[in-house]
Image (cartoon, rainbow, N blue to C red; front, side):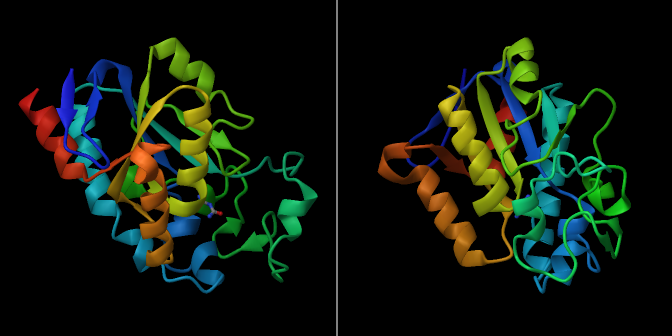
Length: 222
Ligand code: C5J
């Protein structure tokens, strides 16, 4: 059992029963010229998470521990895209339409894929999810149960949408979640800060928050 300093109190975990879950580090959200930037967002707010994620991912891989990745997106026939989600935002270009990097958030398109800097290696499951939460309409719960995972270290983008939604889903399913502060990002820094505060509030109503350095040091100490 390892314990690390975290908010609101130390997080204890057994590495063999703890998965690193990296949410939606996709080209369309992070790369200049992608869907996120097309909507007027400043992608540098998300890109600052790339290096911390690389360091944590390298440490987790070196220790031989469980890593999973998610991608938000839809079938090419859009059968899993609710009409409400398609038109939400009333943008001229919507999910499923041709965008700067192929059809927006459609599986198999360039923009839907994970950025090269954090690309999964063989053996790391990729969960394709049609919603914001990683459990909804996916096999994530089954995979975690099969691997005996009890704790999740949650990284990725965006902190207030897909990260927090996944943490809430995981919380209701009995997982302990630690959200990794510097490995998560939002286009809106104040949303990032608020989303983390919500996780750790009320003595950890959803979970814990810590910096990646705490995890890397702890794994290094073994
Ligand atoms: C959003 C996400 N914000 N991955 N997706 O639409 O947070």
